[in-house]
Image (cartoon, rainbow over all chains, first blue to last red; front, side, top):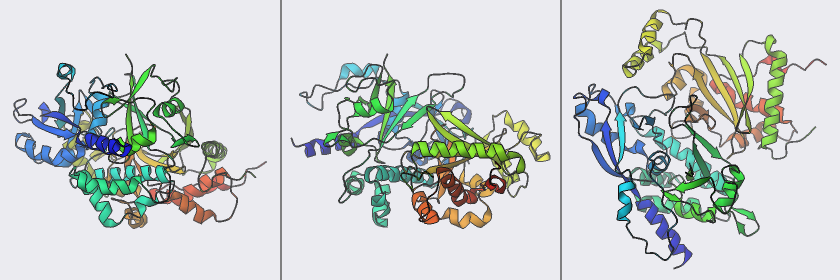
Amino acid sequence: MSSRDVTSRLRERVWNGSIPLEIRLQNKDCRTYENSDPYLIQFPRLSYLALLIHKLHAFFAPNLIFPDAPPSDIWLSYEGVPLKWHYPLGLLYDLYSGAEPAYPPDTTSPPHKHEASDDEHKPLPWRLTVHFSAFPTEQLVRLDNEDKQIHDLFIQGVKEADYLRTGTGKTVMFLSKEDSTQLWDGVRTHNFTLYNPINQKLLNPQGVNLRHLPVRLYLPHAASEDTEPGSLRVVQSLVRAEVSSRQPQTIGMALNTILPTLFPSRRSALLAQAVLHGAVLPLNASVEELVRAVSYLDGWLHIAVVMMA
Amino acid sequence: METLSAFPHLTTSEFEDACTTLAARYDQHSLDQNEWQSVELIYQYEAKYLRITKPLQTCTVGRSTDKDQHTRSDEDEDDIEELEDDDDEVLPTTGGLEVLVVYDILLSPVYRVPVLYISIADPQHRYPPTMQTLYEHLIPSNFEAQAQSGGVIGGISIQDHPATNRPVFFIHPCQTAEAMEESVGRRNITAEEYLILWTGALGKCVGLNVPLALMQQNEV
């Protein structure tokens, strides 16, 4: 199989990755205290919880103590941690669910092997709580009723990624209005046919090699009195596509450069692991190949850094 | 005079030098002005950034204070703060607790230019980072139109602060390099001059002005 096929198959598998969610209404917001039905959905890993608020609003409105609460009052939490709804669901799950990440499989094994024996260890469905009051304004950006905030944050991410890749940010700037709209529609409706052609334009800017690669690392803080539960340190640094002429940057080199204390070796994970889409990244993977095949919708590799037991 | 090696961008060391110099300049002149309340260098994870604070001007002149308080007490139903909120309607000043606008200047690791992050520090949390707060309390009315142009919801919007990871306002940095090129032209400038020019160019629209007293020549 050509590397191009591998890339597009990986892209597709990551696109189709999803997590079952069981969302319950916070008791305080519920007319009947704890008797409301949960909202169940299989939600794409790549997508944003922000895009779920209208459905949640419609589903839970009949149970609300204050039925007039608008969708913009909604926020979600997991075990007391307010979830940043502009992080992709997969990143939130990798950071907070406590699920054991998957290790690089034997490359000869078939791709669709289901490991039923593992299922009991997986905390699925992921049980979240939806709130319609007491919005944590210090921790979360407030939503609006027209999805403008999430659109704005998404576009900011897309622009940054483009600027890193090209050094100019001109690919995004010169997207036609139709293309920009199509990109966001593809994200909003999780439609690959809409999303992919525009994403390909962004990943393959004409006449330039990729300069820097959009990589962002998320480190959970150790619990302490100064930090709220679930607070994170977000680390970002310039990651070159090539470390020297013709030698591609591997994820191990990048981690070793950015977080040398957590990744003292470029080749083997000793203290921490880099988790993306529920899988531990092999440290010898090329960052550029990862960006092309498995980046999130905004073009970034949002990597959870998980300490090893 | 040392020239900037990557103009219109700044390197990390140029940026940090500029912050250090500006903070020192403020220390020297702080008593000659009353625009800024403090300027400090913040060290976090081996990086430096600059924090400037000034009192919030509009906090007691309420074109919207009343409305704000109603929506807020609706939301904060269960919060202890509700009592304080009620007090507030009688006593709009905050009983000695000052409301500050906090301007954080960080170097963007993407665009390699300084980025301005703005928040309001209020012991009573009355100014959450929402677009409503932005236009009612931070952006002078003569800059409204300019701020609203560009981007999905304008050239100033909300993002997580890179150091605290809490939501704050920020001015979109993707045009900053071009703006600096335009305002500096062919001159050679120092990193500190860059930072002062940058503040002059971007700060106005969110109420950040460099006090004139800081611009006086240092006495030798």
